[in-house]
Length: 236
Image 1 (cartoon, helix red, strand yellow):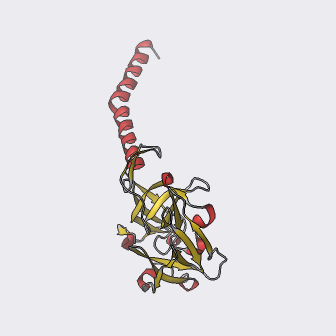
Image 2: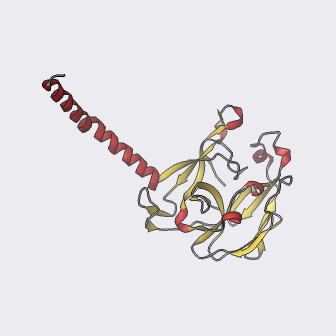
Image 3: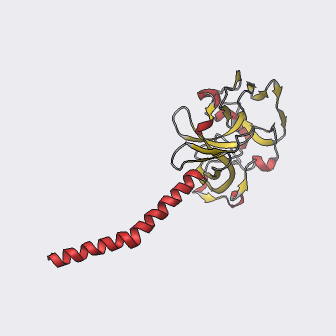
């Protein structure tokens, strides 16, 4: 390769970086900053929130629900709210740092107790009613008989929950008082959820945002077929 060809190649590379690569890099950085600080999605590979959230759901996460953070960090710039009882939130697990999706059951200062899968908040038992069959039918037909179902009324958030009598689980827990600045999290699939009963309460700074809807859903058990009826459906 001659000196002239080398110079031409160098000039072409500089022109590519200046005209093509640089704008593309800026666009990628803006996209990731948006996902980091404003809105994101979270894939759900496990059934700890069934029947509310199924394996294969991709939930929309509103990262501006409670505060504004510096992109790519957990540093708060502004805060205008805090999670409420019944909110479904995404947070970093105190156990291993993995992103989890659970429901807020206890706020700072709350006294939380679980007795045979019945939740007591500040000494008052939550109300339980029958769960509509339509929600139960979201589970595979051969799986449905394995569980017991109810609508649990937590503050302003009536939501589905289920239990599985055949497996060993921590169905009785506490009572404990949620420390200041922390939250007690539980999965709606009470007998198959790794939550605050095991790793303790979650610090406010670990909460990423509020999960508000199922954006997309694909059925693991049927070759990833789309569950069209779950697309863009709100979370209770």
